[in-house]
Image 1 (cartoon, one colour):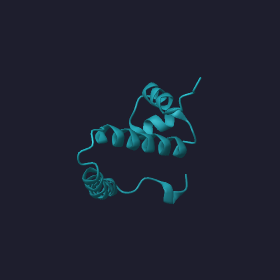
Image 2 (cartoon, rainbow, N blue to C red):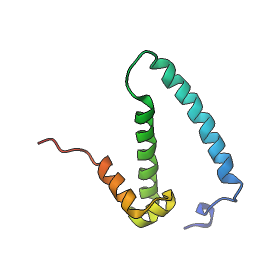
Image 3 (cartoon, rainbow, N blue to C red):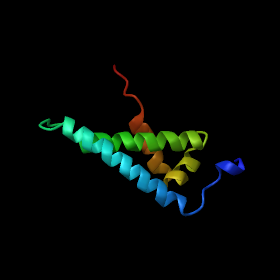
Length: 93
C-alpha cells in the first residue's frame, strides 16, 4: 500500500464514526418520514443495504481476497463467504 493509504491515526476512526452516524441519522429521518403508514420493514432493508456496501467495499479493497476482506470487516472468513452467497443474484429457472 502507498503511505497515504495506510491507516490514519487512532483518533481518526472515532471521528469518522461520528460523521457517519450524523449523516446516517439525517438520511434515516427522511426515509422514515416518507414511509409513515407503510408496512414494510425499513430497518431490515437498510441493514441489508449497509451490510452489502461494507462487504462490497471490503472485497474491493482486499482485491477480492475473502480472508483479507474478512479481517477488514472483523468477520470470520466462513461468515463472509456465506454473506457473499446471500448477496449473489438469485437465478430464475
